[in-house]
Image (tube, one colour):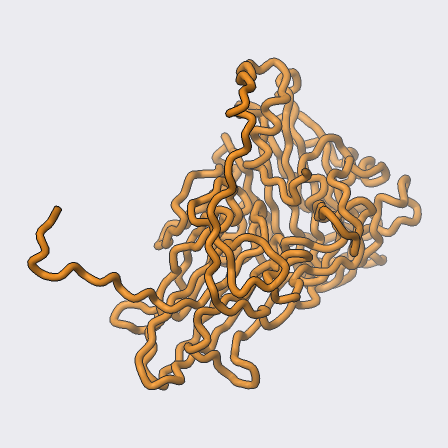
Length: 482
């Protein structure tokens, strides 16, 4: 079965077994006991409300460059240039970008021992769609490698972080998608990225040239995540390109112009057609999506607040086709244009920011204390009377990234300002709470939750508001200890 999302971390064991020249362990002897599949983990149903997430995506266009994930050859990765006059017209999507737009790019490169001196270079080029220069400004952006041996290039190895890590002054991350999401949430930009560009008409300008090196790595595997928030003062075309070159310097500018008149780098993962029944392969995205930020205010129907009595309640994050957790609401961004044989929607909403507000009110006559959590229940599409979780932790990591929350209980019970947490969640995890909210009768509290859905995550997740569990009864005094 083809997995719908292949992370760089997940790709490592798959690729290293095929690398030539590496010693491999002998296969284990096959016995009836060894051939018996492992029993499925025990599952518990948490009975509660699962409600559709209010709000929706904005109209900002996002160049979503994620297919192929594993680059196997040079060429055009994605181009919004006009097809007319190009060497391979089918390699161009012909979408004008003007004003606010984003770029999300995520790729992996697997080197070979006989060519470890070769580096995969990624380029971003742009050109005005007219006869006047266009000024392009970086509003925010970040990029990181899975592994970096060069202090000048940001790296983010897949570190074994705890399930919940409350960040103070020093951010934490695990993997390039996690680092990029963290830096964007912190409103930082990578020093590797220029702040602005002036695009001359009539020819493409190279905005970025970023390496994916493998020399010195074991295994010979690296990944890069890149996300840019951009503003232009005129219409333009943009393309991402891949070429092989030496470790020490990028290919000359003529290389990128030649590639732009050539064909696509080979794609991967043919998707299940939209509306087809049976097994579903989502594939990866190579197109221009509609929507960069999901904004929503969570309230009771017809009210300006959410009653604390609604808990336990959860709202899906990054719900997708056949994964709405019973809400029948798909959050996936639609695509304005995409290449044949790639995903027909932005399944997973990689790089999309969720900006959610919860005006919470205690409408009862007694004090209440609730806890807020981001969780990874088992995927489902039909209503189940709640959410299903694994009793014991699974192996597959489903979410690896940051969440920013304002309004949780702080010192002295006062609402806290922005706090950031890094989460590592496995399939079916009931995650530790991000914090508590304590409300006296009639009191209100404004919660705000922000996250950028990170590369290498597997949807859906849920944002949960849950009653604080009652403390376990203490043993009667005088009971003899065993």
